[in-house]
Image 1: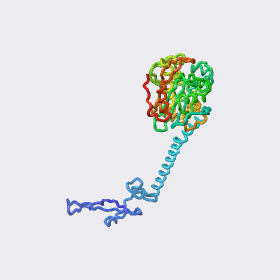
Image 2: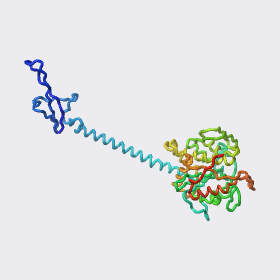
Image 3: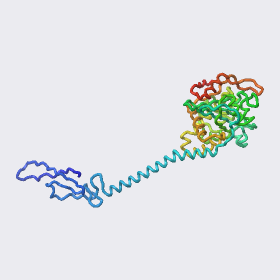
Image 4: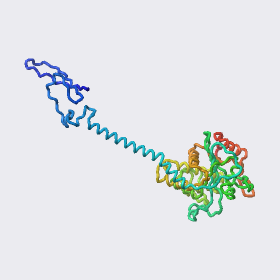
Length: 404
């Protein structure tokens, strides 16, 4: 039972005793379970104040509420409706969350996986022992065979026949908590090619494709290659365009007629054609192949960073074309798993964001005279130490030399 205090009206003035002040007698109004007012004896004879819909009192009738909080039929019905709407609203929120966190990423990955090319890149025979972590051989082919005449003209790739590698990199993802490492191998590095003798390392790809290149890199470094990822010239440019261009900071202005680019110094957004030319420019760079491999790492890391950025991933009209173009630009060895491909992209993004290491195989000289032309000679001692750190998965011990 609840009670409500109601002050009673005071006594009427006594005409025989003027000036007398009377205090109002309090009256207690008790509200019972049935909604009836229980008055003190002094108020028992007074009619209860009626309260219509517009009045200050409590409405009467079948729909009357019990007290200020309202526990009658109308209150219960309104509360039930609010509870039902709230449950429906939260169900839609849960459905949207599932679509965003599960279905959407799976759909993107399915699109990418169906566009990915494959190649049998892993050689047979004797190979280095398996090492902790995961090592990718990343290759950029300069083959023009997949380009139309119009595409060759647009990208300024020329008409060179055959297939060689413009880009050779090792990407090692540590399993011991160390940073990921992206190592450029200059394409003119002078090494032993199995069955072919000494030659520039990019000749291995021309002689025997992906398998011979993998064997050559493994023999020269002692590192077992776990996965192979290759991109072509056209796919490289298409991927940059699909993600809406990439942000690249140019240290020195480059005007290279053979690469068909003229870019000023400073940070700028590059489309596919410009990014490809910037990564391939060689003759206008005083550092030659060494300058080019640094720019290749820079652009490749920028692509990986942009591909997984919110401005691409959260916009379906960009995300799905980027997934199709990105996977279409890549060829992986036939044993690559979806997890392995995702790990590759995440590792490249880590390098792009400064969470990994980016460097070139230590060089002794770039003007080595050979029967196959001027080549690059590695610093044997420093290169051996670098490869040993990767083989043992001790990437935290690797020191990146200052660019010079």
